[in-house]
Image 1: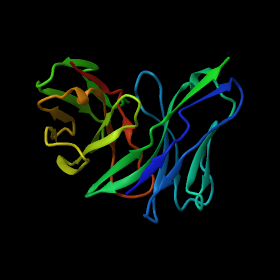
Image 2: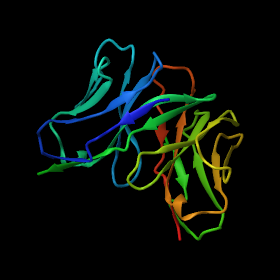
Image 3: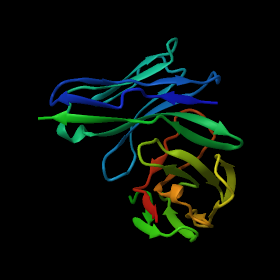
Image 4: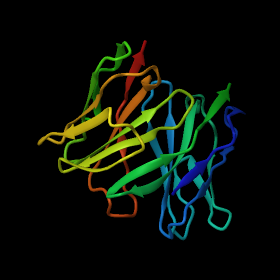
Length: 116
Length: 116
């Protein structure tokens, strides 16, 4: 079974500063994928970044980068130059399989607040 | 291109009633997954449908059922509603599940169900 742990309930950061959101995972599968999603108050889950377990380099997407440390089973999200619009809930997720289905296993999330 | 759409946006029901939630996937996507997100938690996998067949289900009681239509839209049905069913119900579509690698699930805005 897959498990995602996000222990930070909330974080505050000043606009234009960088922030790291922690995520640790557990799985017995040799091949897996890790995702980060952003959920604003409107409720929609917005995909941010993906890291495959066999990817040689850490994933980057614009201001988002993923600090992937396989031996430590961590996949922290780094947001550079925070913007007010980054205030939202952030969820780390892992692709899992149940029976014949493919599903996402999510952590509890953490709330990021960007202050002006 | 239109994203994943869900209806209704909000719904209020009383205990014991039945509810039907609807989801239209992105054009060309043949897989639809349903997730339940209780307040303060990450989304939990309920069902995945692919090519009109159930591929798998999460740990939810038989009161929860779903189906997928020939146009790949989907309905989630919940019978005998309980107070604990109050949640945001998210639908996600993907083009071709189970192929491994990066397979993004695109989420809709969700239906917020309140059971009184």
